[in-house]
Length: 593
Image (spheres, rainbow, N blue to C red):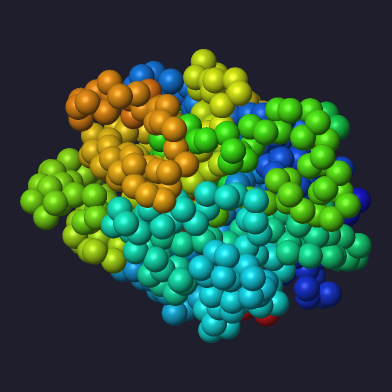
């Protein structure tokens, strides 16, 4: 094993392994990747779409993180699913593939990041994806375009995306009822306007009916590349920072722990941290980069004063659980061992059936769909009063959020149909023999903010994660409005024809906004889209990295993952995270010619 590389990437997850693959395309450089987990190729739950949640909580591939008790969510401690393996969380997610609005990316420029707007970032989004064309039958079945324009959807990228959802008999009835409830159809939500109801794409390889993710897309094809070394089951403890004559710092390597022994992996050109929104700030803080109040508590010498670990944001959701007629298949049918055996055989022989598919009936709605003009105006006034403005970035974000709240073409609420009962509260269970849909109601632009900071001077101890769910009460208001819209859709034909009742929230909770607010606090869960803890912003505005992803006060230390996104996006984030890695590779190559 070499101990010196041109580039050292700390983290082999969604962004890290994609970035390493691109950097190692140059045969004249060497790239080393440090990954805490394994390169897993033998776990069916990672690859088979219908088994997607079965890997959650498995310590082999999941960090098994939890947040601190959430004071505004009934003091609940909630699991934070994060991938611990090559490919990271792209191996564990629900495979929903999407983009936010054009305005979300343009906002990055408004916040002080030239080169990150829609027009500049779109080429990287295209570079990531390999879009499968629909058959004519599938296009008719799902009311979706057979072919999407190549100017907006990549054809030859490494991550395959497709629409494969034949078995869900209530897919189209759900979308039809959403339209009647006020969420019109949108045939191409990747166009820069994602408002509407639609059949969404999943990162499923149409040919093999398996998950297409960072490990299969970027790493597997180059696993024998000579100038790329991947150190698995190896912890990145801290970055070694040496002072330069001008007062800045040079990253000379990364301290690692492998097989119980510490050593240094040296970097001749750059160190790139890609540990994700929870682990990247922890690595920085253990390296002496962060707030003095955090570092001092754990006896770590502060080298660079930056607000690392603040600004945490995630998409929260609550589930409207509807009971559906048992003549419709839902995942509950797999509890029958005979049916499960049939489905396994069908998947093995033909790559068809319940195990071959993800979930893809979506609606994205603006506030103007769920609130009256007077209510929206009142919401904006309260936003103006309650949103923090203690940094320049927050002041700018507040103005953006106010504009988006009034915009009829900017999504604030996500509506997603899952043909199964889904709740992560262990005491809340489905009734045996019943069939359910979990109709998720998500908040796309949360106003609440949290933080993640190291909890010990020992880098092997997990950080304290305060997700800050619902700390701004306006987030509860938006979720309540979204629940009402989902209930309306559930009571609207043709979807209502299949529903025998709303199981949750109970009728009592639906009787008043006060009771519904309490229900929201009791049932809120994360989409596991955490961002923002190493924000890409001007330093004067509270940034940790600049628009080239370089950590302020350093010459050659960058961060490339979801943690650099300063403001939550109106979409599932994985497509954006891949594109960040692609753009980071070009930035690094250009600077190190």
